[in-house]
Image (cartoon, rainbow, N blue to C red; front, side, top):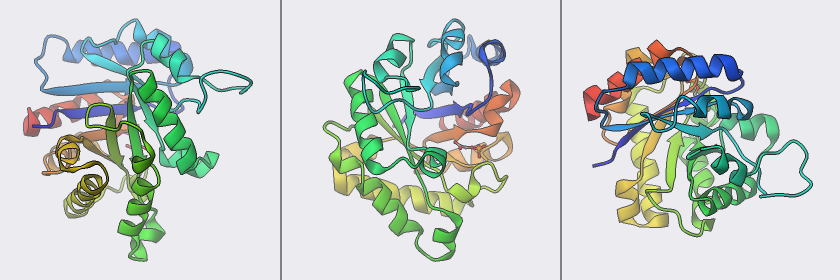
Length: 256
Ligand code: PGA
């Protein structure tokens, strides 16, 4: 039985003061409850220490949205995986479509970053998903296959414990448009099949594959309840404690 993960990707929102408040509000709503899955918030780097004071496994886990592909050196503006670990981070999002699109990150970057995240004993959430043009052109599966093939087989010790996948169709991110349950289930099952081919059937059976793209309280149950969906990577709806916890409630309702 896979444990669900509901992860909030705050993106470029929430400075230290607002972030501490949001994390505290989420924590307050969840504290004392028996959760059957994991809840994670991923603030901007500068907000991580403030959030760490209120959310460190109590019951909210702490994550980062990105990291450097190096541990140290002359890399102006970067933040090393080891620094994140020291700050209390347990999960790092790698390969988000916005990193691909706006910062030109490639499979080489993702593989290097995930290796360093693993070397620090942290878990990586690796994101992938097709563009609207890919889907319209009937290439969604080809794109997803290439994205997973470009990274997973290159990792030294990927397993269901240190790696989480997040299927995020780019046309559904921040657009209010969600994948239909049919599309989501089909792409998740397809992803799991690919993981099985690359990393083995047992890893595939245990690997958590999150759905991301306009997930909100109103559709969380339906999406997270799909057989091959193991939680959500939440953008916009993670910025309001009530909405974010509403999604956790949805996950509890179907997987709790
Ligand atoms: P969204 O973002 O929930 O705002 O669509 C999801 C993501 O980009 O991870």
